[in-house]
Length: 484
Image (tube, rainbow, N blue to C red; front, side):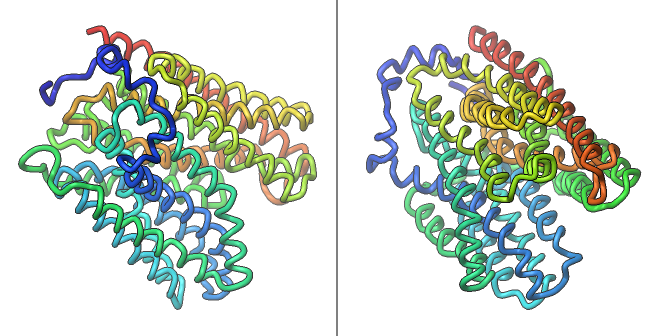
């Protein structure tokens, strides 16, 4: 196969009939155990660090001062994580996966040390910037390495294992961080990531081979496009911090213009950051990346506002509201494990198409609960939202790798976690703007809150419906591409 040939999925399945019977236990065999632990640790660094920092940071602000800088601790991390994810494929091509992972993990550790031993908030911000840059690259390369470290039959199970990691982080992350912060110090909660990152470095040294994968001469890093993309994401993040509607709308509009220009210029460049077909409508890679972006964007309506709605519309306590919110993560993980256990790739690809549909149905159920006051609808809504991601996320990630050319597979793989983060960021800002337009605020009446949340979830349903369209088109284009 030449580097520009696209693999035929159906031919791959026919050529490896024995591989379809692989089970979960194979991930734990000596041949794959170290690789499984390494990639899961790379994801865990991102997932647990997010929950540890978000739980402990308010206490750090009380200790160090600088409450006005609190939002920047999250903004800088997000912006540099996305930039790191965008440049990860170029760095892998230039320096090799092993060297890039090692340096990125060291940068992450340096950032964590800076935040852990900070004496003021500016040092915390510097640490968060380094954490974001390091972890953005690590997460992107952990996706890119999946097809290199595992045979195709095990790829869906690796995604299932990573879903388990996210579920553990969602439940135990706040609990552990809260316990450490309360009984020891917020610095202890920050410090936990350091030994995990050190173990990750040791595993990378053991399992990731030397060498630079890709072209003999790597292209230059397109700093201008990366800086522009970072500026666009920064504008989106800042839009959530302004108080009035007009500046929010202006920042979001400006961000969309900047990001659209980045995609356009990147597509015309010989030195691309994105896959060539990214966000097009006539290639499976393009439509699939739309699904990867739009599903978390739509679900951000629940991420941002569900717990608040449960507490203020139904007067649930924090524990009950948090438990209902966590149902989505449980459903995601359980569904991902079931789907990853299916022996047939063709069956998983067909089931994948149900993911955006389940997301739409789940958001519609929550919307109906808000409109009617029927609290019981929230539970099945959360189950369906989680099942939507669990049904489609791992499979569409594998499909994106399969339909990419050999020369672009790293770019495509690296964009998967990057677009997921971007989707949540854009969604949080966009739904915040909608809520503000509808009069949402601390002094808003219960009825105003209900109307604002109803419109938010209606809009989430509309975005999910667009993801259904792109999901169906991705399946159709992938099948057509496999037959060509």
